[in-house]
Amino acid sequence: MGNMTLFSDQDPETVYPSQDVIWDTFEQVFQAVWDLVTYAPVFRDYYYQGLTQFYMDNVMYLELRALLPQIYELDGSTHDAAWTLKTYQEVTRQFTADHPDFFGARIIFTIHR
Figure 1: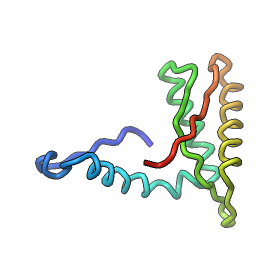
Figure 2: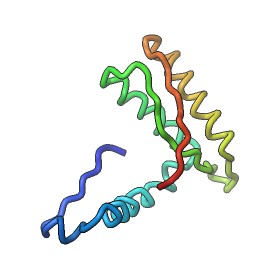
Figure 3: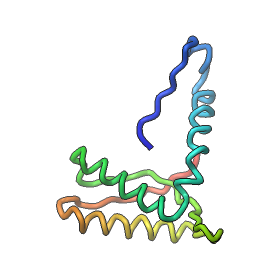
């Protein structure tokens, strides 16, 4: 997901009177893409592409706050948080192999706000 900006043709202080209202609006956007991003092949590609974007911005080491979501396959099976963490590691190793000047990444587990 790229940058997200809220636009309104109304007075933003009226439409978004608090951070909670703004976060509720963003939450709707996040929910719209959640099922796509948590599909196993997309999850891998999404993370790899994220590393690529940071690399293109000359970030050579990344500490990423991330969830450990339950990832699913097309057959309906799901993977747990340990599988998700292992996938982060595997994709990071592959990215580092593809970009030897990239130092690596660390995942900092966070929770949903």
